[in-house]
Image (cartoon, rainbow, N blue to C red; front, side, top):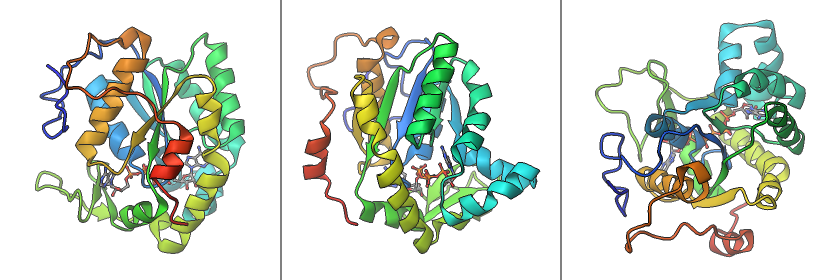
Length: 261
Ligand code: AP5
């Protein structure tokens, strides 16, 4: 079974591609609203890897009303970054598992270095870093329409990806998805997180994926990158019609995807 070229029928029932069964250590990097959570949920279903979202971990602490949750609530609601040491402490214990997709971590150089150290202590390394690329204007529209099901945790969009009848909801809008907070979050992304692309590109770990494509096509492109770049998951020779998963360079992205800010 090959991944459909247009991704149209790509779901966990039809995909039986070349990914094999070896464990995954993958980072999803990208601005707010690029679709990290959406894609991580889908990739977890395809690969069996655990989806670790630092945003979800933080919101769970806040919802549980723990002391830590009360301390970090203000950062989260305003769209500010929670202090590095706090987030690193939350993530470190989970890293000893060997099959995961990290969504929303690292977001600063300090977090990236802490991740390297933690993996080094385990004798492990990253397989791949996927950078989801989209201009700010599209991200603002997406975040304004985002809703998350309280019952299933699934992420939807009021227009492009509405919930089906099988999800009872209710469908919640996040506090940090208000327009004034979205702008601040994107500013922080460009200042603190975007430079990590160079950090990982220098180590040959970075693959760019166009996040403006429909959800199924983005998943297909990430799966191609995983097949191509994760040695243990090396793909069988590709069919002639399959696009070559050659990463675009950053400067090509700057030309192709102008910032709206
Ligand atoms: P977090 O929960 O990680 O939020 P985020 O990074 O701001 O990312 P989002 O969840 O907003 O976007 P996403 O890329 O996951 O997009 P999604 O799939 O939902 O973090 C929240 C807060 O926690 C931070 O602000 C910070 O305070 C704190 N925090 C977290 N990690 C931290 C860290 N490491 N250090 C410090 N602080 C940290 O999609 C968005 C919408 O678009 C949805 O409606 C979806 O349906 C739609 N959509 C997705 N893909 C497509 C597509 N291809 N086409 C059309 N629509 C699409």
